[in-house]
Length: 76
Image (tube, one colour):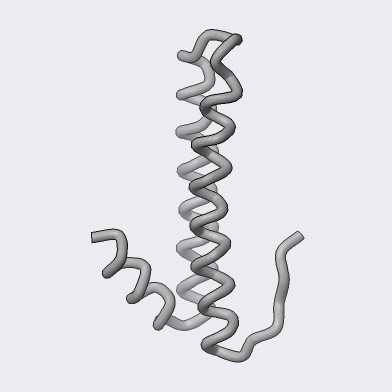
């Protein structure tokens, strides 16, 4: 399921890709804070790993789209 979504998103326009990116990061941020509030302090490193890996997957998708479309932009 994720593979099909990923492929469709990569083939979309850059504008669509950015809209999905901002929606994804907004929802991920809200979910992260809800999750962090429930986690004991000693386990906080675990949720940072999960959030970080999700963002890496999304950045990879944007990088593939950038290469396919020939658009030049980077990540800060």
